[in-house]
Image 1: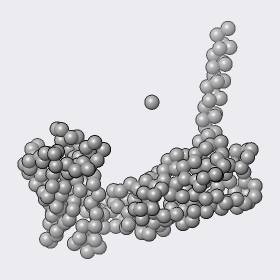
Image 2 (image 1 turned 180 degrees about the vertical axis):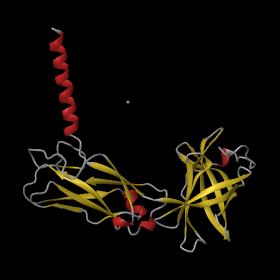
Image 3 (image 1 turned 90 degrees about the vertical axis):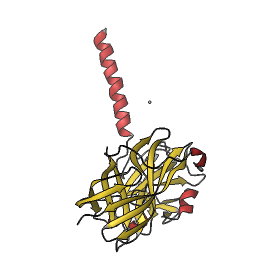
Image 4 (image 1 turned 90 degrees about the horizontal axis):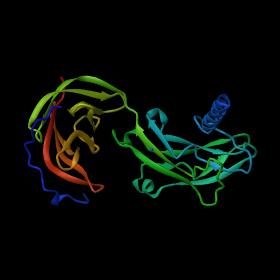
Length: 285
């Protein structure tokens, strides 16, 4: 850990806003355990084919959650499988996404109607986003998808799914710069990494080991495009983990100066604990 002392006085939280026979017995137990294991294995869906159930036609998502990392090669589409219990005939169902996702305006459904062709037990909902650059470097987007009312569920009975989408980034070191913290009153040599996928930078273990700081710049490197709120690895004495979020950046040559706010979680809300201090990064040669 690189920090020893804070030189900015902590603001009062009064100012925080919105802020799980014997051989027969052994053999019987083995059969029970084996049966349980086989049941568990048969219920796992690892890919598109999944388990096709017999009986009345019904539909299900593969699980209650799905995690996807996307790159530019995904062409702005995240595919989410939906299963049905029979491959016979054609069928169409309706789905929708949650209101928060609609309001955010980053992800949308290519179509609310999902059609199954004859002979297919799986079809795909398509979540669309305009550009990979519209996604924050460290953001995780949680999109809820659910069936329309009246859809008959399969025995798997996953009637809704939360899809977590984030950018997949490939980091390469571009050298060592100098990071200077006004909040902690210190400076140190700092490795700087850049993503192959865009003008996105990472400072590994910047303030505390294991906690990188990530930000993105415009194409010319002169403007801060994004610094998502992110933990720095320092725990305040009263309020736990401290998070950084930059509000703006100025650049003079290799010197990047970030106007920063420090946040904590307070009663489930973000509370601003520090404001307006400057963190500076001198980029490598």
